[in-house]
Amino acid sequence: MVLAQAATALRQLLGEVEAALERLLRGEYGRCEVCEGEISPARLEAVPWAARCIGCAEVRRR
Image 1 (tube, rainbow, N blue to C red):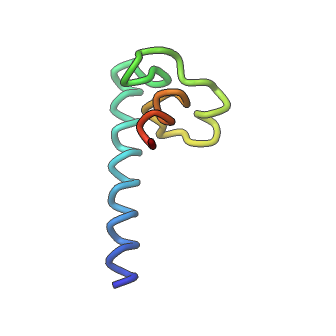
Image 2: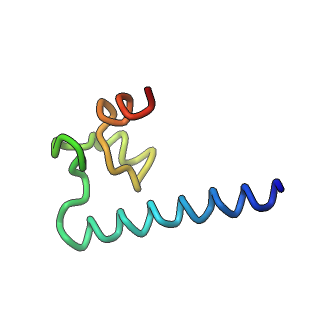
Image 3: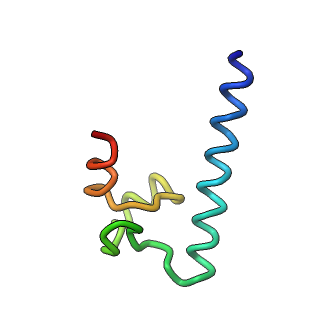
């Protein structure tokens, strides 16, 4: 059970990283997919695959 959960989490993370690479190729890396604002460099340094700015990510978590 634990291994299956870990594998699921890793597949999800891989998908997020691949999506970030696609945004990079399209020239959209660093732009929030929700508000289209800039994702702060500090956030991208911490989470390079981030698709949302911190504000939009906080709204999604609620």
